[in-house]
Amino acid sequence: MEATPLLTPYKMGKFNLAHRVVLAPVTRCRSYENLAQPHNTLYYQQRAAPGVLLIAEASAVSETATGYPRVPGLWSDDQVEAWKPVVDAVHAKGAFFFCQLWHTGRNDHSPTTGTAEFDDGAPPRLETDEIPQMVTDFRVAARNAIRAGFDGVEIHAANGLLVNQFWFFLDIGRVDSSQPLRLDRHTTDGLSDGGSSSLENRCRRLAADVVAAVVDEVGAHRVGVRLSPFAGGDTDSTDAAEARALHLVRSMDRLGVLYCHVVEPRTRANGKKPAIPHRLSPFREAFRGTFIVNGGYDREEGDRAVSRGYADLVSYGRLFLANPDLPERFRKKAELNRYDRSTFYTSDPVVGYTDYPFLGQETQVA
Image (cartoon, rainbow, N blue to C red):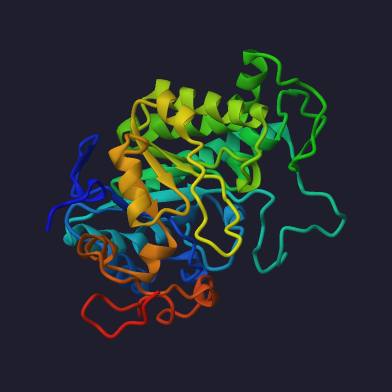
């Protein structure tokens, strides 16, 4: 069967990919005690195939970075050892495996808090002298990912998590450590958006420092960064917010980061298939490495993105979690399994996790 643009080979740095379909990092909350489990091995092994790029769900960079229950970590030796059989199983299938790293910051949905709300109505405060330790946490976690056998790491700087909170929402230009930094999106005192120096200050203190530290630790050829340039995923993001994101992308490009993984703004479907806004062209033009897009893509939209040069690769989350053989289904234009939202974040090691059928098995189609 003739290959469509989405299913053509692609060379990402030293990695020879069989096609342009990527497993997006999707939080599944099934790593008990923050350790990768045997059922995690099966989950990723099911989705692995020669030349496929898989990006593992986010691993927390420290004990205070988890944010959600049962997410894996990479801050300890035990966690490194737990990840090794998962990575080995993926490599045995001939796939490439990157690990996403995160710190959830004020987005804490852990059992101790339950939600991102706080008792006093205010988010926690971060002292400026705490920033270097957070940068170090990312550096150590990246080192541990390579020790576990991963081919590289992806820094999660999207979706309102800690790194995103700094480069997108916050004014962090203040250097007086006696004035704590509030991790909320309403801080307006201090620097303006007027010039490049203020943009540099907004990015530099955490986002750019994290990227630079991880690049220094494991090499730019092993580093990707995930971004969501549009506030809350909305299409009416301000020009200033987009400018901050673009500034960070240019910084990544100067560092030689391997890939830039960017989320499209969300659109409302109104009962119809939502249209993809295709608002990422400025970021594509600013970045000379591999450009990955994510958000609302199906096979046809993925083909169009690749054929028009809008993206090099397309990542799929919900479709890939429900269809472990998604690239093959795309190739055969086969019907897709429905995903079950109710099982996305449950703790069951099988249901909604490793029990989605492959082609040729009895299936419930979308």
